[in-house]
Amino acid sequence: MKWLAIFLLTATAAAQTGPAFDVISVKLAAKNDGTMATRPTLTARRMTWQTDLYYLNSFAWNIPIDRISGVHGDPIVQIEATTNHDATADEMRQMTRTLLATRFKQQARLVSKDVDGAALTLTKGGLKVKQSQLPENDRSYVVGTIPENGITLVTSHYGTIDQLAQNLALFLHQPVWNRTGVTGNYEYKFRYAMDDDPSIDAPSLENALRDQLGVNLLKKQNGPVEYLVIDSMESNPGAN
Image: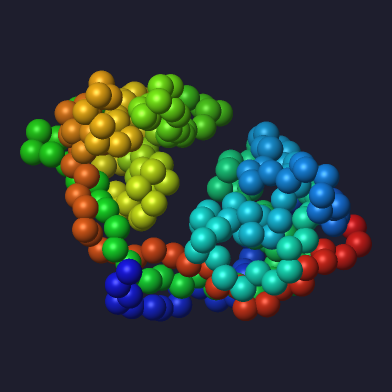
């Protein structure tokens, strides 16, 4: 990776002000009961989760765990939290950051580094799918599944191009930036071959994006990626 610049984006998490859960219980859990999850169970007003501090921070800051440094120890915590209104996923993330700052005394900062990756741009013909209106109380997503051996199916439920880029980053194991300039929500499906095996009846990822969505996938690009640096935090949330 090529590092071009490092600069501070935020102050400490402890200094931030933001929404907080209305009622919350945080307890240390046994390490070997086999119920740790990498993602929380969310409803509009409730979050339940048994996880470690890496995944808790990953959700709170919306950053992959391999971009988090400064977590010491590996406690597993049980969280049950509620809000006093129907909260969005982003609001739940902000409330979790407040939880980390208050219950774990966390001080953290976001740092941006320029790294190598890929980018999405529009083809000359432009986007081939029509914009859809996200229904009230619905949530958009882009998800990849493997319906057949060697084939990935990407499904967008009122998803954004930003969400598509995030999904593709998981497959490519590198950052993917949305440089299409496109906003809004879209519904679509496309499939692509995960490898270069000629026996697989599916287009390459690049061809699928270009022919079905009107989007180019450009390799060997460079751009900023955020990392979370935890300067200090306690591993015990204390008593409820």
